[in-house]
Amino acid sequence: MKKSILILSGLLVIGTSFAHGQRPMMSNAQAAYVKADKKLNEVYKQLHTRHKSDAVFIKNLKNAQRSWIKFRNAEFKMNFPGNNSQYEISTLTNTQAEYLTNLTEERTKKLRVMLDPTLDGLVAYYPFHGNANDVSGNRNNGINHSAILTNDRFGHKKSAYQFTGYSSITIPELFSADCRAFTFVAWVKKRAPDQANHMVIYKGTIQGEATMNITNGRMGCGVNLHEPGTLISTQNWYSAVTTDTLRPNIDYFLVGRYTKGQKLELFINGILSASINVPELDMVADPSGVYSTIGTHGHPSIAPEYYWDGDIDDVRIYTKAIPDSIVQILYHEGGWTGK
Image 1 (cartoon, rainbow, N blue to C red):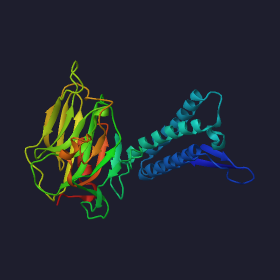
Image 2 (image 1 turned 30 degrees about the horizontal axis):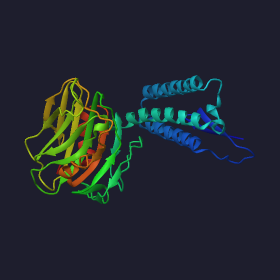
Image 3 (image 1 turned 180 degrees about the vertical axis):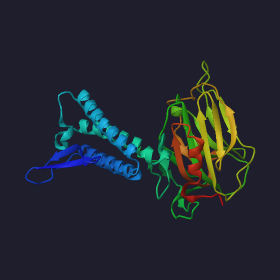
Image 4 (image 1 turned 120 degrees about the horizontal axis):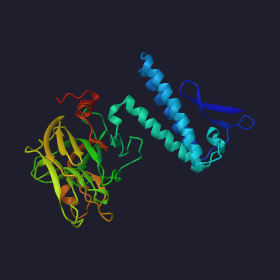
């Protein structure tokens, strides 16, 4: 008998053949495809429910999804000529299942953005709810090095990390040195006032160097841009820096926003606090360089000078310059009023 997995109001997507009424064993790749398809179905239904009173939207949504299914099937046939097994899970090779999983997950991401515009361009989100995992769906999990779980700004237990002066969280390299734009987002709280250096987010030199940090007591964000004809070891920093320091034991919402060839900007609590023009240059990249981190500099010899002393929470990294409207949505997320 055949069990059909349906999606989008009865549109048949995939099925799996059962022998003698028994569920066959699936490979990990096949199971991942089933899981991805189920998630796509869930997101579609959420979108359908939210806009159920808008007949035009629902019609267009259904047409778009039917078109995507045709596209997916055509892509499969192009890459696996003569094989029509995308309709039978049990006959998919691991390579075929992985290919379909990737297509399905990409479609899910696009639909999720329609549900939540803060997801557009998001490559990593670390809410620090009990761990340093990325919940964006991109699997860019962090590795915690001695940071301690603590209460977040709402008082929720084990929902932020306290960095004690020798703590950090290693994260993957999330975008390349030639990217057109990026945005760093984080909630922070300093433990004590000082005029020292402290790192919130450090984008390592492996694929382009950038920071959101405190330098000599002042909050800022920076990019190290490579001037053609110079060595990669040449420091060519452009920084948007405030004139004020962050007061201790107060939660601050920070956004560092970069657009290549245009501007580097810093927002504090939803307000544009610093801005600088930047040239049309790639970031400095050194494949043998240092890794990206939260809470300190990635270079072992420099790290002790930049350890964050306090709390960091809700770190988001985007490969786009998020608009002002999204800055405001994120600042007020969870009903935060700034009081």
